[in-house]
Image (tube, rainbow, N blue to C red):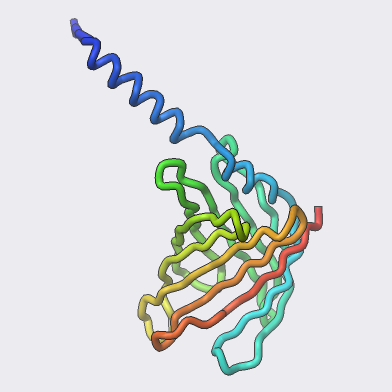
Length: 180
C-alpha cells in the first residue's frame, strides 16, 4: 500500500502547479484572434527568387481551421505554381508561457520543415516570426522572417524575407482576402 502524506507546503505547491498548467493549456486572446481567421481565403502571391529579378505571380486558396479545442490553427494552401500543383500546410499556435506565436510550415515544393516563432505587436496588428530554412542551391541554413499583418477581419498581408549574402530581401508577399 502506498501512503502519500501531504503537507500544507506540498498541497500549496500542488495547487500552484495546477493553476499554472491551467493557464498554460487554456486558449486566450491570441487564440481567439487566430480563430477569427478561420474560413476560406483567396491568396494573391508575388514571389522574388532574386532581389534583382522580375517577380512571379500565382493565386492560391487557403482554408484555416482551429483544432485541438481552439489551441492551434491549421492552414491548408492549394494552388498552381509554374504548371505544377502546389500544396502547403501550416500549423500555428500561441504559447501562453513564452508569450509568442510558433509556426511550422511544410509544402510539396521541398522536403524540409520551417519552424518560426515570434511576438505579436498590437499597435501594428502584426506577428513577426523568425527562423531558419535550408537554401537548396547551397545546402546552407539561412535566416528567414515572416510578418503577418491583420488588416481587418477580411484582409491580411503576409510577407516573407530571406537573408542572402548578409542582406535581407523580400521573397514573397501574399495578399489574403476572405472568401467565406
